[in-house]
Length: 57
Image 1: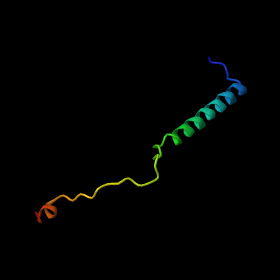
Image 2 (image 1 turned 135 degrees about the horizontal axis):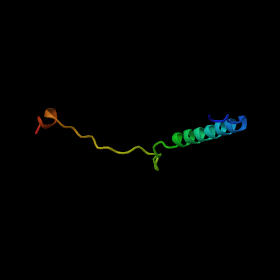
Image 3 (image 1 turned 180 degrees about the vertical axis):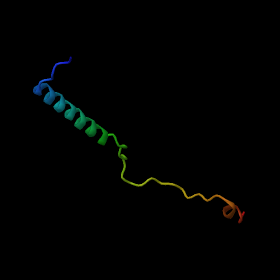
Image 4 (image 1 turned 90 degrees about the vertical axis):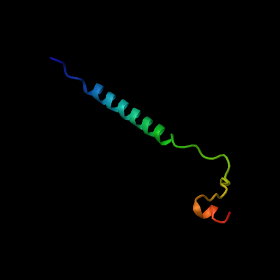
């Protein structure tokens, strides 16, 4: 039969698990997409496609 685990060992394992959990959550929160280096918006030319765009040609 397996012997009983001491109270200190149980609390130590619990605290270690809590530390690992908090560290994982912090790392996951900081793993988002990178911010843009420039603050101005990206320029996208307006393109039209489809039958209405080629009707006047």
